[in-house]
Length: 293
Length: 338
Ligand SMILES: Nc1ncnc2c1ncn2[C@@H]1O[C@H](COP(=O)(O)OP(=O)(O)O)[C@@H](O)[C@H]1O
Ligand SMILES: [Mg+2]
Image 1: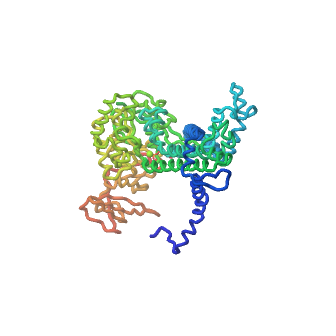
Image 2: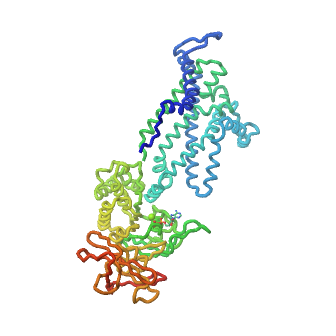
């Protein structure tokens, strides 16, 4: 029996996919193409016309210490967000996997931060850390730490990492929990009979079997920290103090819309696009190559 | 090597009002070096019993000892047992070698001894050429042998098997049965083997525990269980086709159920009159289903005849005579042997 639906008319399939295609074209390919075009142009001095400058924008970027510093900031930020986010959610998932009663309650509690918009997440944490009345700032004061993320760049970095990790934990948690639940219980039991301590069981059986999930989440979290954290940064530190929390995506926005350097900003977004494409390719390659157990 | 003693073992899942008791006081003494099979229908609590011996399930009541030690509060790893799981539970990310060596590495056995022991087990189980493969690159039968190998290399006091053959096809199952028998002869390790398959139980067991709904119905050698079933449950569960149980047999006392195996009924010129309802030919033997009309209803009586006997006509009346020394009597209300 023919299982696939066959269309009699030739244009009907196109009509059906048209909305999706249109959305992709208008909201992704068009801006991307424009950024690409923009990145090899420069505003003529005193405005007016655009001038073709080849790779000058890129050359300028890589000679700009600010840009290189932003790379470093981004690297630190995303590594810390990914590592902290993954570790904390794995820990929570392992604990949830052991909970027999109240599992639903626990899960729901952990999932809701995901429903919060990045900006709101940022604002929430700013409130808590705002000195001197914020809850956390108040506690920190009590233990002798003078919290000020507007002046202290380590404080600022910590703040955005906490907010970014907090927002992403639920997503990671759900994937880790599903991964843990797909490991047959008898494997753990066999290892227990073989004499492995719970700690050893985790590191020699559970963790290796979770590695496809972990890798997938690693890529997702890096991409998230590169792009989706814009709202958090804008709501908390605005890239400051100085430019110490100005990660690449924030710098694109700042240079483009605040400093009005369209060419430079476009070149930066082209580089960002290249990074995300690379990550995605690595991801797919790995997923394809990684055989399912 | 060690004996296993179960005394009044109970198990309930859950607690309080929702508690569900699934093992109702099982006592048994398994001798050192013995091969004991636990057999019973699905859901009767065989796995639960085995897992309590392994330490994977808490014991709700009673006591389990391995050797001279009460093991109730010991971790699985402290009980000196090895277990073969139904789904084999091989570590999918490790090679066959590492699967077998895992427990030894944890026990800090020296490297060259690990290698020697794994190689020896691999040789016994004919796994030598697969040591570097991952479990997913093996056939079902090979995986099963790796699971056995993982148990052997540890040289435990007790082997526990939870339906290890049920995922194999019929031919491989028969073959593996023989291998397990041979292995037991060679190693002599006390073994507790769970299955729902009565043929497996009859062929493997030195003694067998027949379980029904969390109760041990009988514990004895296969011959005893076959020749003197302790209850109507055992009588019908062991033996294929099952024993005929006749409630109001001609000449029997009221309240007594008479049992007779199909092979112990002979077709004779006179005797108990039955109508031939159906015939089944199974190669070397033939089953005759005789209908015994009595009162309102009727009962089917199965008779097993050897090849070469004249074939009765469908619908005809035949006469059968039971061998008198092969009759079994059970209390109709309790089902127990009288
Ligand atoms: N983890 C569990 N929680 C609750 N009930 C269980 C659990 N495991 C088994 N049972 C119940 O215990 C009974 C015996 O199960 P089991 O020992 O697995 O039977 P068998 O191995 O003989 O098929 C079944 O009724 C089953 O539903
Ligand atoms: Mg079972």
